[in-house]
Image (tube, rainbow, N blue to C red; front, side, top):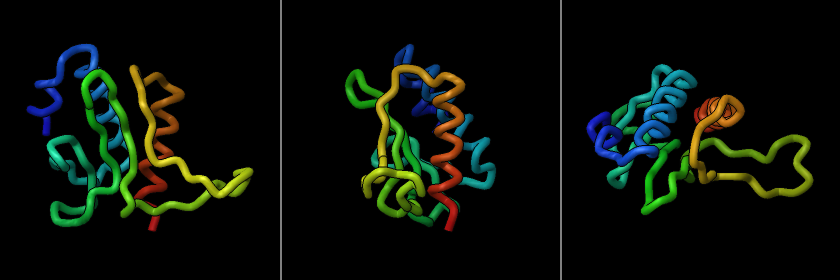
Amino acid sequence: MTEKIEAMPEPYRAVARRLHETILAAGPKLKPRLWYGMPGYATTRSAPVRVFFRLDDDLMSVGITEKAYRAPAPDAPNSLMPCAWYLTELDEAGADLLTEVVRAAFAD
């Protein structure tokens, strides 16, 4: 996993490092592995990946898979549930949101 992150060009490598650290801090028992060639996170090496991030051309994204626990926010004005976000950096507010997303994805 770390080889994949370290092979990313800057500035994406720094963002990927922070994503990896934030995801593991939110779910310290998660098992990282490559998923479709990019970092993915599951509860065991054989369990389905629920959280992932990827670099596609010049866009980095983080998301949850269909295997993640999902529910609309209690105060949501509609039934749409976010499942992916594009980012160019990971600031404190973004890290806080990612922490919530990871914890919710593994809530069941």
